[in-house]
Length: 100
Image (cartoon, rainbow, N blue to C red; front, side, top):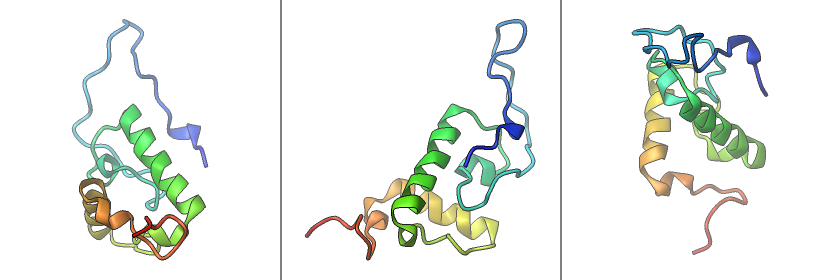
């Protein structure tokens, strides 16, 4: 689940956090990639947490991530962005569905 091949240092040799790059190549598994990755933006620790959340959802109930089989990057991003802005999207037919 972890790919340290794309890891980078948070702080440079001078002790400063480097300026974010303008465009970054998409190098993650689409299913678990953060929204910043879909937008080809520089990623940081918050993106690690977001990706981890998608992995946990998939492990416990694969049906609750509707983009699981999608190939289209823009549609996958839209669904993830909707999820982050609406609790209703967390409802599933699996065990994670909130009780009524």
